[in-house]
Length: 95
Image 1 (cartoon, rainbow, N blue to C red):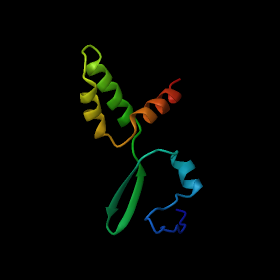
Image 2: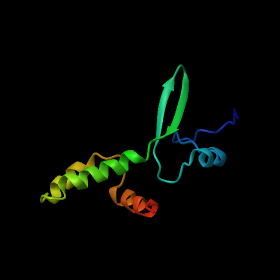
Image 3: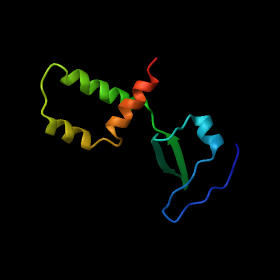
Image 4: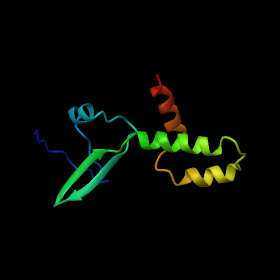
């Protein structure tokens, strides 16, 4: 295992070294999961398919009925990502 030191900024931010981002396939806008395990900080990429499945399930569930825009805003307000940005990135990922 390769250990490197990284610095925590005054705002509590860290920069993941490029070799780690490349090795794990982490891109700008991706989410990470963090966990404290026996006094260690464990960071791992969040599964990308969860967001895609969530959007697809919503579209399937509501494609045959009219939904008020207020209801859509309410449902999407709890999501941990921007719907517009995620839909755009999912479209770019499709074959």
